[in-house]
Amino acid sequence: MNIIITGASKGIGKAIAAEFAAAGNTILLCSRGEKSLYD
Image 1: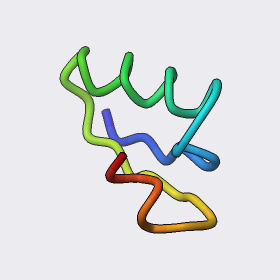
Image 2: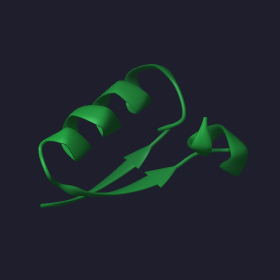
Image 3: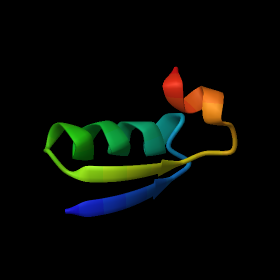
C-alpha cells in the first residue's frame, strides 16, 4: 500500500509512519522541516 503522511516528523504522525513502515508499506513523509525527518 502507498501512504502519504503529513506532520510525520514528531508526535502522532511519527508514530503512525513507524507503524506503517514496519508493516512493509511504502510511505511518503511530509514535514515543515526536512532535517526533522532524519532525526
